[in-house]
Amino acid sequence: MSIIQKKLLVFSALASVLVLLAYDARPHFDKGLIQLKRQNNSAQRHWSLFYDQSFVFYEGPFRYQDDINQIRDLIEPGHIVLSDLATSYYAAASLPVYVRNVHRHQGRTQSSSWQKLIDQRIACNLHKQEVFLTFKEFIDTELRQNGLRGQPLFKYVLVNKDINNKNLRLDCLWHRRAIVMENILSVAELKFEGEFLNLYEINDRLATSAPEGQ
Image 1 (cartoon, helix red, strand yellow):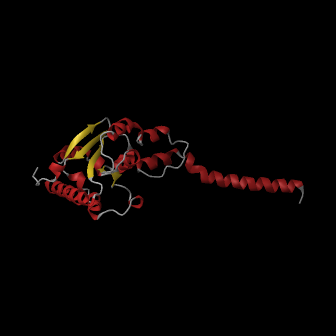
Image 2 (image 1 turned 45 degrees about the vertical axis):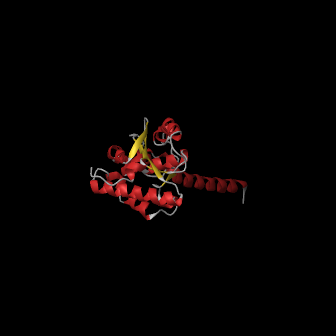
């Protein structure tokens, strides 16, 4: 094989590789695909020329750091906090607490009572008397049983009020945050009201008292 033939073969192989790479790289330069993923709350965040850093800033916990730092000084470490799905991850990463509202494949085996609370969206419908009484009974049972076992207590509710973070929109605890904030006061006390986050602490006396109609 002559030198010219060898060069042609190399150039042909290189051109073929470049064509394949260009075809595979197309999604990384597709602005419409990024917008489609964001509109549908896609968890896929592949590198893209058009994935703006503002998306990372506004759809993450960076703006909550001042609130989180103040909350850290108020909570008793080692207990359980209930929040929406995204904020649960932020809390688990930034605060000395346990969370229960996580993706199934990323959590340990959940108790049936917690699974029922989350799956049936009980905390999202506290404005309904029968649902509120179910929630209150759940707290009472958790406090008694875990207290006897020396396990972490369900002690806090964390409400995220941010309206710009699209990740929050996957959970009814964010969509119905006004209902949560209004009705949780029947069993908890507002411990902190920040720019983005409200922290409520379960009141043992209220939570374990005889249920009262609303």
